[in-house]
Length: 91
Image (cartoon, rainbow, N blue to C red; front, side, top):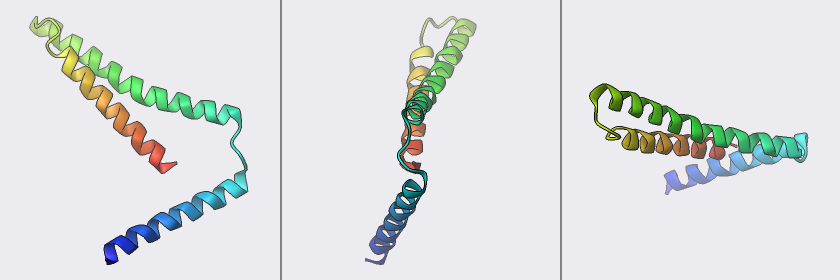
């Protein structure tokens, strides 16, 4: 029961901090919304591309076709989505 109330208390405090920040700063501009979308996009795309390039490099070195490219691309995509999810929950 105590753990649940601690989690609820943290959640309420975070909500109050966000509300106070929102009241101080006002409504975000269109440019700020656009920047957030851009950050999320790059947060997902960059790890995916790193996985593709690393997979292609390994496949060329070992002569394995696209054996490593697919899994490393999916791993990069998963890492990018997880990072974006974490970033969104901090906002």
